[in-house]
Image (cartoon, rainbow, N blue to C red; front, top):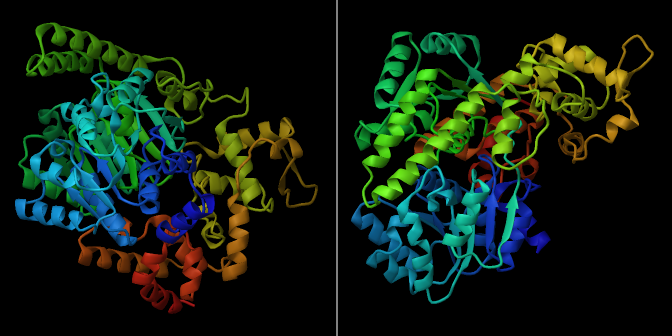
Length: 601
């Protein structure tokens, strides 16, 4: 089984390794066990049900409330050679009927369906006569009234399953769930003898900050003018607030879009597409925006006002940095936010239909308790990351080194994540450099051309300390030296080496090993990084995506782009060694990519 699922990973997705938790989940699904997986945003949940779907007989149904996610996933699957479809309210009746006919004909391996469709006569007519082998429930926290995004339609899933002639394997996935919500998911879905896994809630590349500016709009303007960003989201609490911030940015020549419930469907869809397709850089939105948005290069998420609870905040903040690059999650806090949110909670619940007065009272108490815990996050005198992880039941150190509290209280009482990342960089660059080169790598100095020429800007740790000064880096180096994790050579170059004690600190397959293999295959990774080649490949990607009506990152992502420019593969068979290019994409785009690259050799 192991060899088979790895061959699928390579053939269709172009990757050699699974991320944490993926392999175990896939194997359990293929063994016929139910699964409940709690995996942070950007950790690759979709592969966990897509690979079993490819490997299994029958159809995999994916239940999702997110139209944008369905479209994105179906685009991506069809690009890698897996036939898939979605069934939701965005389809006309004729489109829906045609998709059902294709499904009955066995054309699709994976079908995404909105929960509201499950018990409709038209869908049941198909489902009761189909071989449904796997039922994947995405955003599974929506089934629980104790979750932050309860959807009543999710409670019908078990009724649908009970009607099927054969019970499929059920796999539930969510990014945010407390122990109470996890219990509710298992109970509501009637999971049997299930395998459960939580790969951890920590997103190490995210920098968390709470700021209390006198003027929030001025803070945002200053922030945007002082950082380099690809895309960003600014969340506001109300429609009025959203319009105010949007108009302010426009008046200051900031390219932005707007998204809230007062816009009609066409306006919302256009603005969302403009953001996904990079026609605008910033989206100013209410909480209605973002679920199912798979855009990998969001550099920041700013909350203009206090979110209603930790779950909502962490899910929205988690839309930043999905590509693994450093990203900011900034919450702008003021006391008036608490009063406004209490009003919104009471009004929202009082206006709810179908629940009793007693239930309304209970929900208000529950939601206000969650709001209180959200407020404590903004006023804590401790590590922000630790507060979040503790909320979700995980332990954490007192100093993450990557939040606004720890940055202000920077200390070296024990080895922190930054020190470990420095050690990894020393190892992955071959222990050939001194402190100045290493500082430029971890601080993300894009002016040092030696870094891009050697391909070190593709390291996971590149820019990991970009929010700190060189002085912070040097203090880290001194601490590592004083505590016998590293040493300096005695020659004039003062190269930094790792001691055996330092080597024992981290255990993972080093990209140095992967790079050494690729160096043997390509033999040219030491050549200068060619920005003209990068621009031409980006233009090819953009035009190809426009022709197909999909986001550019679905053709190939930025990590793949960097490898293409770094290694300059000049033969089709060499493209199989490039991360993120599977067999189908190579068949579709390989010749065009090779033609472009050979012009620069």
